[in-house]
Structure formats: C-alpha cells, structure tokens
Image 1 (cartoon, each protein chain N blue to C red):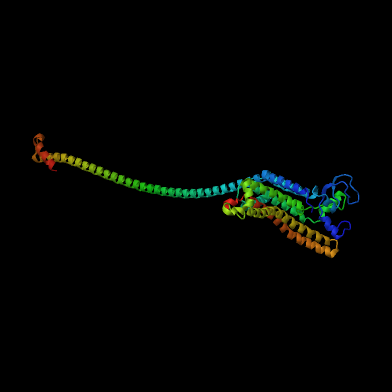
Image 2 (cartoon, helix red, strand yellow):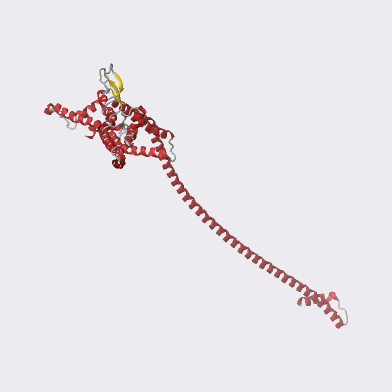
Amino acid sequence: MAGGQTSTEYIQHHLQNWTYGKLPAGYTRYDGTVLQETTWTNAHSSQEAKDMGFSAVHVDTLGWSIVLGALFIFVFSRVAKKATSDTPKGLQSFVELIVSFVDSTVKDTFHYKNRMIAPMGLTIFCWVFIMNFMDLIPVDWLPLLAGKIAGDSHFFFKVVPTTDPNATLGMAIGVFLLMIFFSIQQKGPIGFIKELTFHPFAPPTKGAGLLIAPVMIAINFILEFVSLIAKPISLGLRLFGNLYAGEMIFILIALMFSAGLVFGLFGGVLQWAWAVFHILVITLQAFVFMVLTTVYMAMAYDNHDESH
Amino acid sequence: MNINLTLIGQTLTFFIFVWFCAKFVWPALIGVMAEREKKIADGLQAAERADKDLELAQKEATKQLHDAKEQAATIVDQANKRAAQIVDEAKEQAKAEGERLITAAKAEIEQEANRAKEDLRGQVATLALAGAEKILGQSIDAKAHNELVSKLSAQL
C-alpha cells in the first residue's frame, strides 16, 4: 500500500486506469484549480477519469495490449520466418504445438473455407492469454515501478488489459463486425435481414395469415436482434468478468501484506494458491474466447434456409 | 471502468494483429507443417518401399545362392562322371592295346613258328635227301624228286 492509503483507496487506486482524456473548460480539477479552456490531460482521480466521458483513452490498457500483442506477433513471425520443415527445435516446436492445436480446434467448429478464421483464432488465443497472464504478476510490482518512473506514487497503472471492459468489448466488437460482414457476404443483405426477421417463427406467406405476418416478423426481429447483440456483449463481458474478479481477489490478498507478519505470510500462501488456480482460468478464458469467436463465425456462415 | 475511446482503439488493434497474423504468421507456419507432414509421409513410404526392396533382394540372393550351389553340384557331378569316363576309357584303351599287343605277339609267334616250320621243312627235305642219298648211295636228282620232296615237306 503506497503512502498511507486506506484499504478502500488502495483498491480504488488499483482499479483505476491511466486515463488520458479531454476535460472541458471550467472544470474543477482534483487540486481545486479551474481549467480555463478544454484540455487533454492525464486524469488524477477516478472522478476526473469519469468526467472525461468517451473522449479519453486508457493509455495503460491500450499500451499493454499493443505491447503484448506485438510480442506475440514478433515471436511468432520470427519463428515463422525461420521455420524449416526439418526436425523442429525449441521455440518452433512450441509454436507449432499451439498452431496445430488452434488449427484442429477451429477445424472442429468451422467447416467452411475461410483463410482468416484460423489465424484469428490463433491471434485471439495467444493475445488474450498473454494479456491475461499479466494478472499473475504480483499486483503491486508494475504499478509501483510505473509510479517511481512517473515520480507520482498515485500514478494510475493497470497492467492487465483484459480487466478493462474497453479491451474485451473492443475485441468483441471486432468479432461482431466480422460476424456481420461474413453474414452479409455469405447470405447477401436480403438473406441477412431475412435471418433476423423470418426466424424462429416463419410468417405465413399467403392467405389470411398474411395479416399476422408483420406481427410475427416484429417478434422474430426482437428475438433475433437481442440474441445477435447478446453475442458480442456476452463474449466481452465473460472475459472481463473472469479476469476482473481474479484481479480483485489478488488485490484483496495483497491488502494482507500490510497487515502484519502473520497475515502477510498467510497472504503470500493465498496469493500463490490463487495464482496457481488462476493459471487455469486465464488459459480457459483465452480458449473460450477463441472457440466462441469461431462458433460465431460458423454461425455467420450457416445458412438457415438450407437447413430448413 | 469507463467506456471510452479505448474501445475503438482496441478494436483497431485487434484487426491489425489479426490481419498481420493471417498475412505473415499463419500461412508460413501452416505451410512448413504441411511440408513436414508430406516429408514424413514420403519418408515412411520410402522406408516401406526400401523394406520391400530389401526383402526382394534377400529372396533374390537366396535364390542365386541356391542356384549357384545347384550349379556347383552339377559341375562336380559332371566332373566326377567325366573322370570316371576317362578312367573307363583309359582302361578300355589299355585293354584294347593289351589285346592288340597280345594278338600281335601271337601273330608274330605264329609267324615265327611257321617260319621255323618252313626252315625245318626245308632242312627236313635236305636231311631226307641227304639220308636217302646215303641210303641209296647215289645222288638223287634233285630235280627229279623235287615233287616228292615238296609233298613230303607239305605234310610236315
């Protein structure tokens, strides 16, 4: 706990991202100064971060996710460049293990021809896994280091991008856009709209039933639209929720370290135990995100008209 | 926990990474793996073929060895036969030669005997004549009694 915070302050501090955003003119800052004009600046309190609204960026989330994604891309592309079809060694075996694992998983769910789905699965699996992995680094290390570098012990710094709903929902939106894109590409705009309106209750197409057709279409649309929107939201929130909860428990355990030797030791054991368990969680969540993405893509390709 | 521009930034980052992976990482790795798969399959096939070849070669070798043995046996057999034949022939020849020699010797002996008989006959005639001459006290005209003497000597 840095600089005599209360437990609440400590937890809140750990849950606040490094936010760089726009504060409007006339805004009263954390230290009482009033802004003369609209400024882009770092938020110094949770309230400031909140007041920045949508025009703000979580520098730590974006920074870490880009750095970790680049790490994945760097390692894998280096291996890919050097890869030989002779006996694979060391890193290449490891990379190939992951690639073939992802490949078989994707092939199990996605039976259509698309060169993008499997690489996307690989990217998601590895990227999400590395981002989740940051959760296993003791919660205070990197924020303290960042605080030292920034010369501000209250510097906000969250190192696990997936505990930020922006990151997980951002990826989920990416998946969602691809879903819509492939859906329209495969079925055409008409087919896509038909899928939203003509299922699950097929409206009558002739006779007196024609009168209730609009009602059925409306019901269908409500059902299908909700289920469509629910996909990316559940995808993003599931990952966020799991990692946020894990992070929260790490923070709570870390609170013990300042509560004396006995509690500190107990906290150490707990942290170790939770980290071991968390290894399972982070891998599983990365895998789930990949599989669900693949399933959604397969659903985008599936044509209801053919199966009926 | 605030939703802000990070959302869009993350989406863009996601697309960029996915694009990069799909463009540069995935095809290379999958290509290499497929290539290795093919290599291994080919290798296994080649090993199988080599195995079969080896088996064939072994069979061939055994067969050749067998043939060679058979041939050698035949040759030895033939040689033995030939040797026996030669020995037989030699024996035959020796026998024939011996017989011939014996015949020749016999003939010579007979000739010799005949000649001796002739001689003896001639001498008998002479002796008879001389005896008769002595007995008769007179010389006998050889010409006049030649026929008689000849008859006598032919009887011998």
